[in-house]
Length: 204
View 1 (cartoon, rainbow, N blue to C red):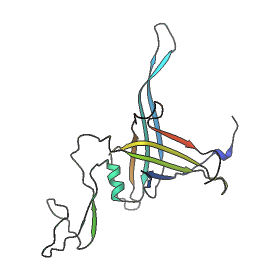
View 2: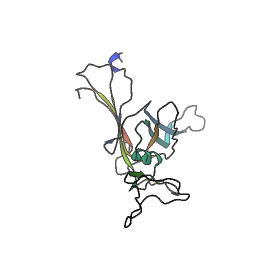
View 3: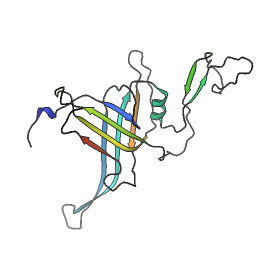
View 4: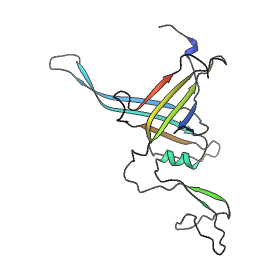
């Protein structure tokens, strides 16, 4: 195998969910693929003669810098749609559609629009509510006419649902998100979770 400096790259890329870009990313984007295997070693043998795959996990992890209700809902794995309302004016004939809770300590500004992500109480992760994930990394250090990409695709993914929002005094607010690939059983074995594409020739 030859050594080629042009195959060295760094940097992150752009993340798309159902073909819609999530916005600016910050920090590392990490793709993790693991397989837990079981060896079969016959009696008297010193080495296994076969291996069986017990579990297979595939994750893509990223930190989204743009705070949006859609990104927050996705990171939490919430299945309910985002609701919206306009600040209640209190005029006669107006219908109050702002969130109802107790104690009602949040005062809406009249006429302003709000988005709401509601959560809590779900018992099962809905594997039918999946999204298609595409992460594109463009090689750095190549010439302007040689802009090749590495692309990671998950056909159908769900979010871990673990969320930690840290409102730092002197740092950016990031939404950490973890996508886990699920099996699309209608595809052939060996091609049910995703793919990694390396662009070899051409420019973009």
